[in-house]
Structures are given as C-alpha cells and as structure tokens.
Image (tube, rainbow, N blue to C red):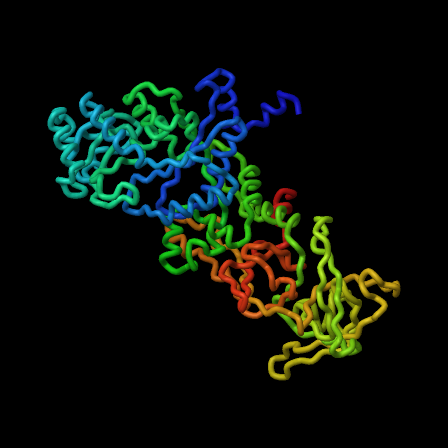
Length: 562
C-alpha cells in the first residue's frame, strides 16, 4: 500500500489526528481518555469506545487515561468501578498508572466556579427544575431569563458557599452559567453547573453537598489531564459549544483538548440504553447483568465471546459520523471466525436417542483417536471411548427418510465420526407416544477411520457419544433477546413487548464426551455440527453447564453476498 492509498483508508478520526500531528499541534502528542460513568455495567457500545480510544492512542504512540465520571453519587458504586476496570483489562487494554476520577478535581472545579461568579458569568438560581426547563423554552424562540439572573456577585458568592456548606435542601438551588438565553443552541441557555445533593460519595464521603454536572466537569477534567482528543458519541455534538465556552472562561490550556464526535454503536435486536437494560434486570426478564443474552460485556463474556472477537468487531464496524444500525449477524460472524481457529472440536448430543450396535462385543471399549481442530495443525488429537451403546442426535434418524436424507434411517448407512460405518437394521418405538426409543445397527469392523480397507463410501457422517462414558450436562441454547430488529424504535409500544419468549432453551440433560470433564470456566468448544459452546462459570464438578455462544450458521456472509 502506497502512502496515498494508506491515507485514503484512514477513518475521519485518524485523519484529524494525523493532520494535528503534521501541524505540530500539541507538540504532536496524542492523549485520549475513556470516561465511563460508574453507574452501571459496560455494554458492547462501550467496548467500541474502549477499542477506539485506546486503539487510536496506540496507533500514534500516545496514551489513554481511564477516568471515572463520578459526579452523581446517587447511582454510583465501587461495584461498577471494579467491573469497568475488569472489562477494560479483559478487552486487552492497559491504562497503566493513569486511573483518574472527576472527584479528584472537585476542589479545582469549585475554585473555577468561584472565578466565574466573580466575573459575572455564573449565578445561583432558586428556580425549581420545572421552572428552569420552562424558562429555557424551545430552540426556535428565545428563552426567558431567570428572576435570579442578575443577583450581585456578593450575593452569589455567599449563596454558593452556603450551598457547599449544606445549608439548603436538595433541589432548592443550583449554580448556572450566565451565557445566552436567546441562543438557538439550548445547551448555551444558562446551563446548570452545580446541584445540591446530600448524598455520600463513594470516594469523598460526605465532604461535598454540591456536585458538578457533566458538562461542567467533562471539559475541565480533559484539560487538567492534558487530553488532546476528547472523543464522544454524537449526542454530545450539541454540547461542544458549551465545552469550548467553559474552556475559554477558565484560561489557556496546553494542550487544549478538542472534542470530536462519532456515531455510537446501534445493534439490531438489541437495546443499548442503561435505563432499559436496568428494567430488564430489575423486572426479572433476565437473570442479571451477566445474563448471556444481555449486550453487557459481562454477559457477552459469559456467553463465550472472546476479547479478540470484540476488537475485530469494533474494527469492522469502523468509525462513522452519522448513526446507523449494525446487523447482529456481523458480531456473530466475528466470534465464529475467532472460535473456528481456536476452539477444540468435541462431540455433544443435545437431543439424545440411544443407538445399539448389535454385533459389537458387549463390555468392549475401544479408544478412537480424533483430531482436536482441523483449522489448527498444532492442536493434536484426543482419545474418545467407543462402545456398543451410543447416544446420537434424535434428528440424525428418520423413520421415513427422503432420498436426499444422508443420515440414518432403516437400511441406510452412515459413518460415525472417527469410528465405523454402521447400518440401521431396526428400531423401537414407545407404544404410547410413538417416539423412537432405541435404534439397532450393525457395524463393519473393516471401516474403522484411519484404517478403512473396505472401500465403502457413504455420504453422511454423524457425531455420537459412548453411553457408558458420557457426561450428563446442562446446556443453555440462546436466541436473540428480542424478536424485533429495533425493539426500542416503536414509540407507541413498550420495548419489552418485543422480548423473544424463546430466547433461552434449557436442555437439562444432554450428553458430551468425557474429555470435557476437565473443562475450565469460559473455555470454548465446538460441539460438532451443533455450534460453539463455553463452560459457564457457575458450573461445578457435579453439574457442568454449557452456554451456547453462537451457531455454526454464518448469516453475515449470506447478507454480504446478497
């Protein structure tokens, strides 16, 4: 790739960064930050932001800070902070010693607020939240000035100090910036900088009775940390003039941070709103924040997704300037692509029916050597026990099989994976239900895999598990949590109306080969011909639980080729 081709392949953020570097802006330094609010668990949209901020800095030899925007103690906790740090590390990124909190700067924010009051650029407002909202008006008409807007500097300083001291009840007063109540940008109509909250903070305790709003804390935190490129999602585009205004009032910063917006990740068949995800958890619609159907990083990890697959997904999604919806199939493609290379192949029977090889010696056990992963030549082979009685998948047998059914049926032959060719001779049904209970076959001892001297050719190969050696396990098969591609897009309906009632299928007794007895939590496997599965962390030695990660079917490739 020549330099021109490389430049045209840059996303718009990389183009901005390279232009800044070429002009010597900020001394050529690139310093980004990931600023989560510690009021919930991260989801896959945050994963994209993490990959973007850390990845951009890595590409240009820069640094990334992890900064918690802990300005609202009402919903924040150490539980969320610890989970966020774990998620960022799990994705493969390291903020080194650069772990910061907005609360680190509360004293400085307060001093700067005093500066604005003294300059006549901030005032204490006694209006209620509803009154402030009404006075702000609408973008096409000027807002209404607060009756408290022209208080003297002395009165504002006195009231603000008393707010800090905790003299006033919550909601009784706020500190507002004095900007322009006629601005078409609603963010500039005297935004609130501080509100009174008599809540204990997880880091500062009960020291503070007032807490800064996001817009007041955000840009100043960036400036204090030397952030050069403050990357936000598109909903903050309208906030950018306020970001710049606050920086202008405080003074000269070198480097001066620049806010740049990109499109947030929207994924089909999913909701990304923290509020909506909280509704699902609190309402018992899912088992918790780490439910494998949830788009949280905890849920995705428990389902068996790998850090590599999420980083690859973020790269494929790219960076856009306008909102769009990414098909969930692309995410599934990325995990399937990764697991195909690294997941050992094993045999698991999810809907078992017993198969008896009538001419195989009773009590005999034979060791079959089967490759672990054909995509990985270094993965080697494993030994799987074979015996007279096996379990196979119920849908691998058909009583009245059509001509093109290449699995098992009366008189039909198939190969048992890594073992012998067998022929179905008869079967037994349950007289009450009509369900197949047992299938009776004979095998050809000359057809052993790797030693076949018979010359026989069959079109079908099926997997199996030796009944005397099989491990009984629980398997959880997942489908999309919502049946509608845009569950939150119907204004007249509650998004929960589109929950998929079949998003979880619980198989209480499936059978897997005995090699899985020593599986480790979150270790991935491909159940041959079924899909990718991972061992759930809640498993015990007495009860192994496997979560389906993704099926073998690649719908994204089909979508691309349409």
